[in-house]
Structures are given as C-alpha cells and as structure tokens.
Length: 114
Image 1: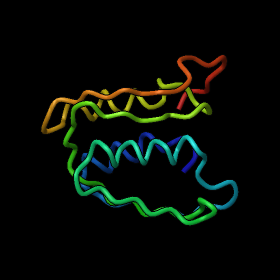
Image 2: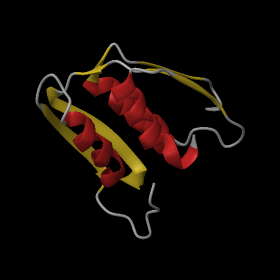
Image 3: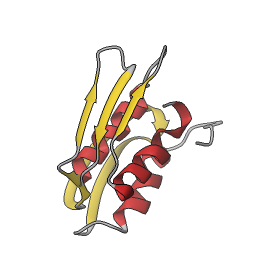
Image 4: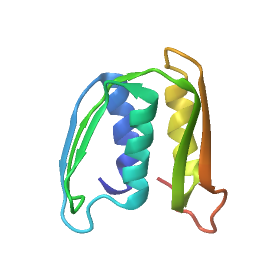
C-alpha cells in the first residue's frame, strides 16, 4: 500500500468498502500497521487481517464511533502528525466525540509527505 495507506483507509471507512491488498517486499511498514490498529480503536466493527510478512492485507471498515480517553502508541518510525491527520478527518464523522492520547515522536526532520 505504501505511501497511500492513510488515504486508502480514510476512503474505505467513508465508502464502507473493503480493502484487499497483495504486495511484495517490504509489505506494510510498522507505522502503517499502527495506523490500521488505531482505526480499529476508533471504529466499531472494523476488522484488519495482516499476514506474518505484512504483504497481504484484508481491511473491513466499520463505523467511525469516536470515543473518550483512548490511548495509542504511535511508535517512533513516524511523528504523531502521520496519525493525527486521518483522525481529524474521520473524527468529524464519528458518532461520538473523539478524545485520544497519541504517544510517540512529536516531530521528525524531513518527514515525507503522504
């Protein structure tokens, strides 16, 4: 899925369409897996299946619910802005207000767009 992980998942959630992806090396990166797990936290009935190597993904979007007092560890491979951007967009469509604490790197030098 590469650089388009955030965009694919946001569109999938809003359109209620599943994503199935087959990729070759390197497959999904740690920050992309973390983003998918974050979307599971703020969505109801969302289902993510990733194989061991990260080269196959099945993503079934749920309904964006929001939630209070959620916590997510973003890791250190991307700054929290990578995770915050889709949350802002999807949070507008949540059934409930969204309050979440993102733990991780606050800024990165030369973070690529996308």
